[in-house]
Length: 365
Figure 1 (tube, rainbow, N blue to C red):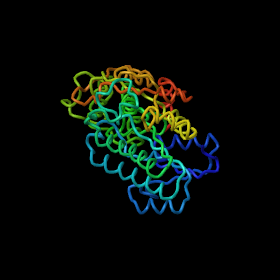
Figure 2: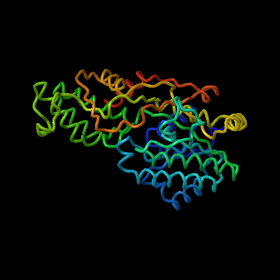
Figure 3: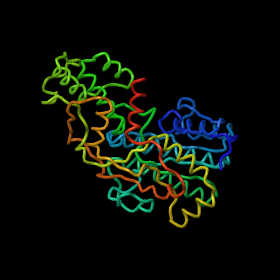
């Protein structure tokens, strides 16, 4: 169990998952929360991490720090994803052990499962087949994190726990179209398309300032939408780069099925798992032969339908163009969350309501 007097280090507190954990902890009365920006503490640097744990006397760690991104980022920056995530996990876990940290929770990812795993994916499917090639380096790093928890618990008697969240969305997401996951990418693209339909050039430029450079293919779509609706082009993209019919681009075929969980639900689940009695959790895991728990919503949606839902939320009524030259990733990725639900946890935020909430925050920013 955690105590409200515990000094709790939330690694990665500026990210979507880490910031949600900070919110949840504060809501539950935990006030001694320790955070560091990357500029203050580079978790890939072992001496710095060792010094931090030696000085700060941490009781509990939530390890949410990670290099994350969507299909394009994972497939493009493969070395960065495996190196940075391995270094973060190794440094934080080992120094937490050395400093006598009482409990640690490692946030993994559903990409640890084999590409052809039976659906919904149960914890027992771990390491039973080949991984999805496009995000294999990231998956291998997350698998290593699970195995580190197992190894330190077995050899040193630590209480290092791990949860595997499904695709997360919510406040403080990443909307960089070269780096983001599918839902925030779709939300930003549909927002831009809706502004182009209205001829709101200032809003498009303001979005670029707030959320990063608009890629060339999206610029071409925006110019096509603007001119089709009687407005002048904003980016002056060559006519031969614009789509034949005006619309906003979405990657892949739209056929893959994905599960989405609001990040506040993930944070509530993470704290729930950390508060479970050792005997209760250890007995259940030992009986099943597993060392982590899935965290998800238990429901899935096609990317095609997700794009429609996002378009409805932002008010975009134009075409959605599917770029089949872009990778789909795995066909289906649904977690079996039966074990966590039997322990007493349930998600609280539905997908539609969650997207509406996120879009309001996006517009405010």
